[in-house]
Length: 229
Image 1 (cartoon, one colour):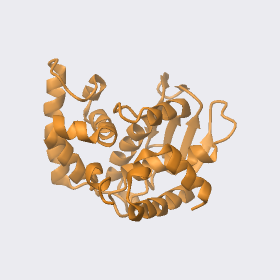
Image 2 (spheres, one colour):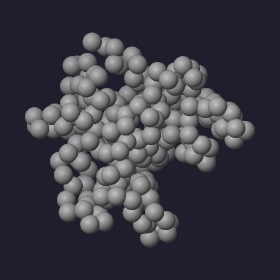
Image 3 (tube, one colour):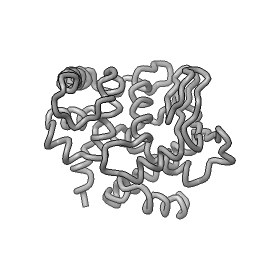
Image 4 (tube, rainbow, N blue to C red):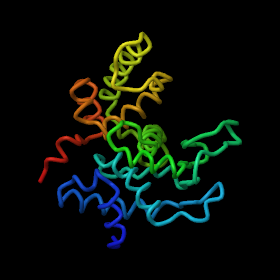
């Protein structure tokens, strides 16, 4: 991997910085491959997708799927990058990002992506959110030899815990998750993954069962990974 890419990671991607040298090497290997198989396309007046954009967006995908030996979001061949919120002609709404399995695309707005990276402990991260959606969809798409990597029993356990938490939030109970997580199970998963990576200690303290279930489901525990020096 080019030294410039490593410099970008070291400066802007906390997850990578906290990994052991051995895991950093593995991360770089996965990242280089991910970048090599994706097409990054500027949209909405963005002149070009810079190397920094490519590295950091790709690093977010690699982070979310890091626990799996070979999950590279193969169904999603294109990543569209807008400079800011954009209007979707499909949904007729403004978006910060989205995942479209029909078209095989992941879409992010760079300003919102950067905001998520710059506030790495608030549990709100657009990049993680969209990659979590993509990961869940990838698990269900059967023709690309990359599906069914979620353990079904663990996913069922997560569903049960998620539904309990959604009911709690709907009743006005105190939760570490924001209210938008209650929209549906898909949204709860994406929000939960944001909190899992950005506020792991707080999530484990508040909902140890949910944290540990996510750690098993995603096959990684950030609190353990960051101590492997």
